[in-house]
Image (cartoon, rainbow over all chains, first blue to last red; front, side, top):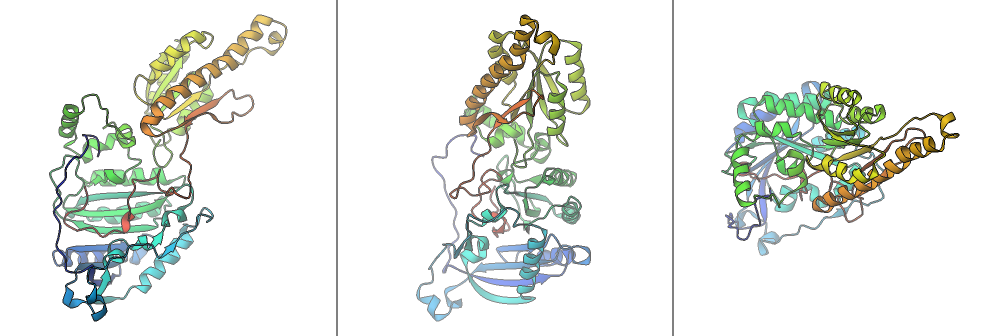
Length: 283
Length: 193
């Protein structure tokens, strides 16, 4: 969290790839149960998988999604042209969002229309498509300054992880977003594997849902309700993306908080390193 | 102040003011606030503490005498001793007696001391304190950022919201900067911590 000093040396473990492309399988899930089953079935088959979830869909379509899974492409899987420069990488945005857009562009009608288009545009099932790593890993970055579409009030991204047996929490949280009048503009569901030894490490085996929610008058109340659901399920909110969680929830979500505090008190006894997050959560 | 505009701590200068307490209650809807009430020791101050704690907030007090401007700096320092404050409401004021005020010079001066001088004195001191907490946390204070309604004798000082510019992502004050937002498909087994 940047509160225990300055990183002077880091060692990265990297994955060797032959190309800058990914072989992608795409499939549509008709509802949340279908999606969860597909994610479970594909667990272990791909190093990367992510589901875009239509959080505005209700009733029997609640949780409908587009699931994309991929693995690094081998050189012999590229076409002749791509094989000439297999590591070519281009990440520049194709289109820039202008800064003259009016507020309120991200609303229920526009999000519902985009969700419908995104869902229908996706093939029901497609195997073995070769994509660049930029559109696969960061599809939104093809749209430069995309956050401008949210206007001056901006948005919050809320991401949590709950244990694998708490999949009902995913459904309840989507229903809570509906009940609170929130309009999640983007929602992503993944399955996590084991976490790492960091005291405040976020990942844990379970379901992780990330939702982008435009800030409105009711956003705070909706997200507090999500906090309750996550706590009830024994989950946690991702601190790296948090900008509003109340401090009381923190020790329950991160049971190793005191151990981390002991380290921080030893290396920075005067708490010279601080941040807005640290102040708000009384880290 | 969090990303959806909810403060976690509030200072009320003139801590028995009904307007000040109403502002706190509005700010604290659905949240648990740490509230510092700066006011003279009195049963009304005790009642204000009860009112806030009864609503689930944490309330502490510091002694404050509006007419004693020399003591204001100490009062403000004491108010911030428990930690940084997100919002400060300067709600100090006397209603006074209009008939007396235009005929009794001492009464008129007292009204101005409390309603004008004390508000300016504490407002400047609070702004200075917010400025000190600001650079450390990249916040800037605004004094009297919102115009008080006529007769309300209430002004507020709060950290300014960062201005959006074309070079600043709109989400800069809303979320931790993530290059790809939630659209990233990170490794299922080793997501960022």
